[in-house]
Figure 1 (cartoon, rainbow, N blue to C red):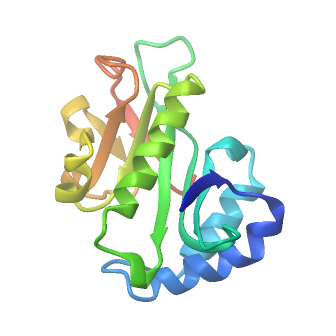
Figure 2 (cartoon, rainbow, N blue to C red):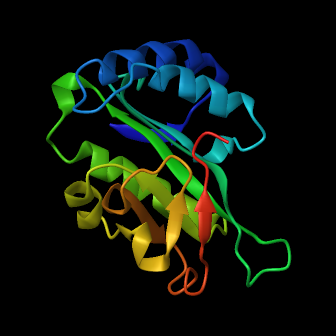
Length: 177
């Protein structure tokens, strides 16, 4: 098994992989594959932080995918431009036959490590707090970071890549803006 940066050659396979993976997810709106395509086509896309987990002799069978893209906390009164750039972790997909083996956690940890090495400060995501808290994420509400979608605080989680970086950073993120 390897974790590597996605390539343009992977894009069609990733689209189908994410679509299939989310058909059996606990929470899904059925458009996660479209979100991947949209994020990849925007100016928030960071190719180095769009990763696949591959298996097999040739490393071509996808068993996982993750993306980290830029997002801003807006309305931060303590900063000159009132914005603070962080990363959005979404979506994370693991092959149905490989779930519950720690592969999603491995993929997230690798993405966080790469993001830190690239000089990013923090990551935000939505999801099950029991899952994300095991990885070191905390409620965004702890920092008074709200979201335009009114997702409950316990389901919006942040991870500081730089310890203490979010102290005093209060504002709002728009996950679809």
